[in-house]
Amino acid sequence: NIPVDGARPDPAFANIVSLASDAEAKTHSVNLGWNLTLPQWRRSFFFFNYTWSRSDTNTTGAFVLPANGDTLDTEWGPSAGDARHRAGFSMSMSPLQNLSVGLSARAQSGSPYNITTGRDDNRDGLFSDRPAGISRNSARTAAIWDVGGRISYAWGFGTPRQGGGGGGTVVMIGGGGGGGAMAPGFGGGAADRRFRVEFYLSGQNLLNHDNYVGYSGVITSPFFGQATNVMNPRRLQVGVRFGF
Image 1 (cartoon, rainbow, N blue to C red):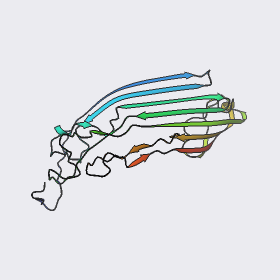
Image 2 (cartoon, rainbow, N blue to C red; image 1 turned 180 degrees about the horizontal axis):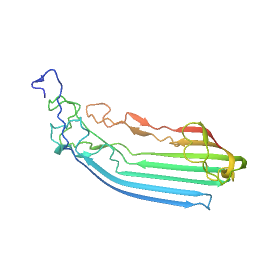
Image 3 (tube, rainbow, N blue to C red; image 1 turned 60 degrees about the horizontal axis):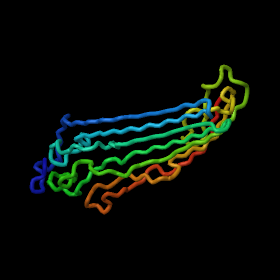
Image 4 (cartoon, one colour; image 1 turned 90 degrees about the horizontal axis):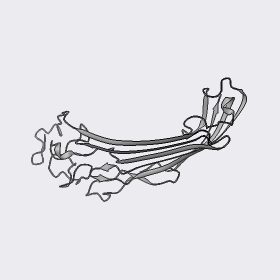
């Protein structure tokens, strides 16, 4: 139902889309991981992960029409989540009895976004046309990274728990940043105590690094090539966990 001289052949409808399962996708990835556990040295744990990947497809989705009519051959390009490099690091330890410290960091290279003219150059009623010679999702955002951390102090009291620590019920007061198990060496013997209390401070994006998103790919826009939003500003959470 493509417009002819500006008018639809059937004015009761806009574009009439016929869906066919003829799209394709290709993904290649390599993942490297490393971890080190030193229970006798301040109960330390270190983890590092790196992933290289490439993901290409010739469609953005079932109801997103190709920019050039119905030809999928010209639509090959990176998928929306194609960040070529991803890396993560985390560590935790108990530098002092009852005290637990954790640190994490993550980073990834830029994600693809599409460049369009902002006009209906081929008069098909869609404003998804790309400039000549520009493939789909050919532009890239800036890389993103952030650093997080957590520090907690635990204290145990009451009669010794039969059979050692573990199990039990945990009650949390505070934000959702408590996360995970009780602090290593919880209470310095508190792991086998009847009651356990942990005070914690956790943070996301501690350095308050600006991770920009929402890049505009419309070349006729005054914001072309610029980010329109920023994600995950610094966030600190304080809480208490009580286990029994």
